[in-house]
Amino acid sequence: MVVGVMSAFLVTAGCDEVYRSTRAAAEQYANENPNKSTDQIYVETEDGKTTPLSDLRDADSKPASVPAPAPASTTSDTDGTGEVLKYEDTPSQPTVELFNIGSIMAVFNGGTPATFTLAKKAQLKTMSTYHWNDAKGATGGTLGLKDASGKTYGPWSVTTSDGQGGAPSVYWNVSPDVTLEPGTYTIVDSEPATWSQNTETLGVGMSWGTGYYLD
Image (cartoon, rainbow, N blue to C red; front, top):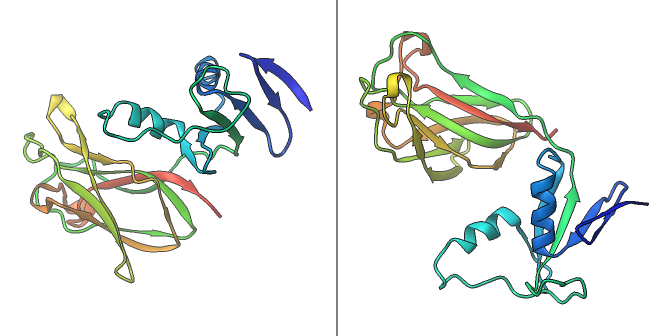
């Protein structure tokens, strides 16, 4: 059923709701509808592959030596970009706290590896560790995971953020966006010497993770 036409592209409704457009029109639609969280945007090329629009935007900012996506064969290519955008209607998942090993008490360096257990399959979207280090923070490193069988995930390079009183680089943050099966996982922090811990965490390095459950 057609429910609307916007920016010269068709919007259809149903369980397989799909929006098709050139990239320019799709970006305009996304900008005009910032709260439509169920729409995930992909670029489809003639080889049948899809690339998230966010990834394509990242590629746009890279040097010219990065190859451009292959052009798509489509009659809807009205702006000459050679790309077709698909908005796939996928249920948005509420982000929840998957684990929290924290404390508001005074902290000390030397955290031991933190572990967390998932009772259900989950998508880990973000993970952070804390490096107060006497208000000096730590310049940054990597975070990773290891499951009970020894399989590793990552490591991922961190971005840092400031903490209380402007203390620099005390939070180490990554966005793994990785699917984890039920089980116990160990967080691997590349700098345990400055990983914050205290008696409330039983000496375990302070860590947080968010995402959503898949089952």
